[in-house]
Length: 336
Image (tube, rainbow, N blue to C red):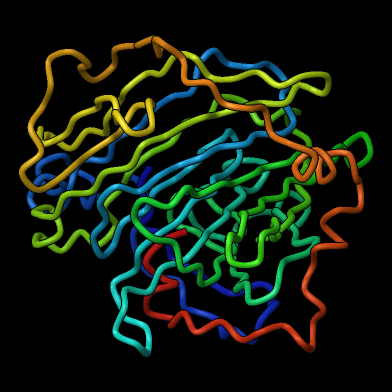
């Protein structure tokens, strides 16, 4: 789940300026395994199983156990995008780590890494975004649209995200990402994008932990988060993930593991620092979660968003009164 994405601006929701497109792409020597090992942690992933064909909504909970500057904790990496939280490499005005929520959607087809090269009718187009959300177009690892806002999550806090897909005529679909804000007790829209319907349904999905600081020092920092419960909505009922596949990227660093978080009862992914591999759950193995923790299905607050075809417009920013986003250009450029 590499994030060396080079951003150019496309739309403005909260007073954000554009960024230049940088060099490089997914096929450059930057991603040679030996170069990755020298500068960064291994990315680790947890595939949610069984796959639910054609599901159009996904609810996830993630608890960050340990973070470090330049970390992405993705709650749901689905077939056309991902949603999660990040700790950036800068501090806020009080000297605390600047932390954000992010939601990105890829263009309908892979046309390379240059966002300018993607045909206009194949691009992800912004439908709506929430207050304080910065909107940009990205490239470098495929192309698409990205949304980001400050979100003061904390270690040990339950982070709840929701992704909803809606049919938009015969040839298009809309994909929206929400995050639950415990400070105000409600779901808040990150963004909604309209894309060509090359396929329908959110497809296979996983969570992951990634080091995007990649400055050599960062690989010495431990990162860990637990993932679950995970529910997928097929239009008639919810399906909870009961099996999980632990995977890794091609970085040869082996200070990674996946184990049960005893407080949550779900699998926890870790990478970096002094993390040691564990023999009971090796990369590319599948494990069934037994016993499966008792978790209620998503409630009416979630179902009301899923049922309401106009939910994204209701939750959208009101334009002129949208709060400015204090995320600097330097760190918005760090990832897609």
